[in-house]
Each structure stands twice: as C-alpha cells, then as structure tokens.
Length: 419
Image (cartoon, rainbow, N blue to C red; front, side, top):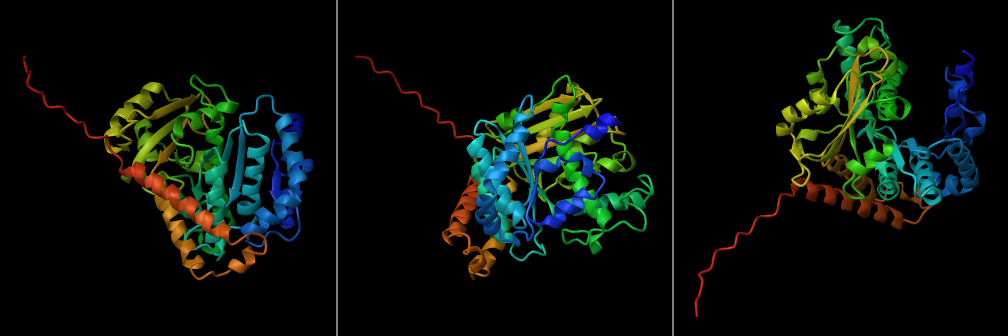
C-alpha cells in the first residue's frame, strides 16, 4: 500500500481554468499527481485558440519549460512525449499546440505524440471549427505522430455498450448499465450529459493509450516501443495521423464486465470494422498506407499472420506497401481479459474528417464571424495559413488514396538491320 501511495505520475497537468484542476484534486486520483507539476490560471482561454496559444503560451513559457524538464530528467530512458488535449476549446487547442511547439524547440530529437479529441459536428462551442482548424494545422507541422479520437465516435461506442448491457450480453449493474446510464443522443454526446457516460467515453480513449504504452511497461516476445510506430507508420512527414481501433471495446474499469467474449478471428475483424474506430470513418473504403497490430495477452504471431492473410483481400492497401503490417506482442493482457488488440492505421479516410472540419470552418470564416475575438491575439492571416495547411494535407491524402502503380511501358522489338 505504501508503494502505491508514493507512486506519482510522470505528467505535467495544465489548464487555464482553476476549477478543472481543483475538481481533479478532489477526485480519487488526486494523490497520483505531483502538486509541483500542476499549472493553472483562473479565467480560462474562453474557447479562443489565439488566447491560449498567443496569450497564455508566452506568459507561462518559463513555467511550462521548468515542469517539462523536471519530468524529462526523471526518466531513465525517455521514449517520447504524449500530449493529451482537446481541440474544441481554447486551452487544449491553443496552449496545447503551443506546448507542442515548445517540445519541438527544446527536445527536437524526442518524438512528440499527440492524442487530441476532435469536436463533434454539433459541438456546443460555436467557435470550435476555428479552434480545431488552427490547432490541427499546428499538429501537421509540429507533431511526430497524431492519434485523434472523436467525441461522436466515442458516444456511439458508449451507447452500443449500454445496449449490449441492457440486452444481457454483458454483466448487469456496471457503470454503463442500469437506469442511471446515459444513451447517445446521436449528436456526438451522451443524452442528458450523464457523468457515467462521459466517464465511459474518457475510459475508452484511456484504454487505447494504455494499450499503446503496454509494451513500454510490460515484457513481451515482440514488444514495440513508441519510436517503432513513427518509423513504420509514417511514410511521409506530414501524413502522420493514425486511426485507432480496439477489440474488445470497453473502458478500463468496466473491461471485465462489459467486454464480450471474442474469438481470436473476431478480434481481428472488429478492429478493421467501422464500428471499432475511435474516429467516425470507414477505413475499408479508403487506402491504407501502413498498419500496426499491437497484441496483448495469449495471442501469437501465427494468429496475426493467419488473420492478415484472411483480411488483406478486403483491405485496400497502398500499391507500394501491400505487406505494410507492423506486429507487436506484449505478454501482459488487460485486467480481466485473456487477450486484446489495438490497431493503428495510417488510412486515407482521415481526409474525410479534415474535409468535414474545413467545411465547418469555411462556413464561419467566409462571413468573418467571431474573427475579431481572435485578432486581439493574432494576425488574421493565421486563419488563411491554417486553411492552406489543412487543404494541402487533404489533397496529399486524396492523391495517395487514388494513386495506383505506374503503367508498365513495353518496348516493341525492332528488326535487326544487317549491313
């Protein structure tokens, strides 16, 4: 018990709204965080990317650097930085991407991973298209690898888990089941804003990150460190956005109760299905540039190879990387399960997510609505630069999606001429 109480997360926790930090400190994990590694202000960034990035960022630069160095120096073997933030508000999008740029500047040789939460199409923050677009442009330029999740996809997964519980296919009385559980309203958030459903959505995203880092924390016959992901799944520098999918799906605290039994083959089928993605997209309808299959528990390389051979005909692989599967195997399964699987895929369907975001951005920006709030902290040309960056990224993914092998030019034999 004493060892657990002395354990501290190697984390820097930042929020410009003091109430969020205070709420966390009153929760069950309050003892896990070092109070010297917390940073907060009072009023927040007001859902304004520019306020967070160009206002609070320079203001707290030295304090951020000090906390980052403290955390990095405590590491025996620094694998990388993992930034968890939302793109729909001011602090997560603005100060979060400022922090990412700071990491690039101060630790240029260390990989920078971002796990951003993309806002839903009907997000209640009216300026979220601005915040998300401006932040996403920074992710294109400064992140080594991005693993986006989306509120709309998480809400849909949470709703399906609740329905499964109600039908008796999972244990009753869990955090997602029963009369207090919230349903997805089909709007990218749980109906009624039920706390249990929000916890489940956060838990599913957290489970993906736990799986991602499992090979760093546990032994395995074919462990994959974080640097291997960037090396094998990012064929071009700007195209570093990876889809993530899990099987079985559940939050960590409900894993044993809600995760329905799956055969090994079903596990692999689930991670390539549309319903298993943590981003609202259909990976089978677009080109896959590279894929990592990260297994935990009682799975083997033979299981992976057999299922890759079974599923490959239904997947559209890049013509220059038809064998583009990176395999990882960690021996330690999640609590309560014999095995699980995380799939990370660099898939061209991410262009649809960015196209939807840019459509929402253009709807506001063509009328210059709310722009004056942002120009208090930044130049108006920043909007145009972000739009150019994201439209260019969309075009790169579209070209990769439609690319095929170059036609083979056959030379016709020519007759021999003898003198």
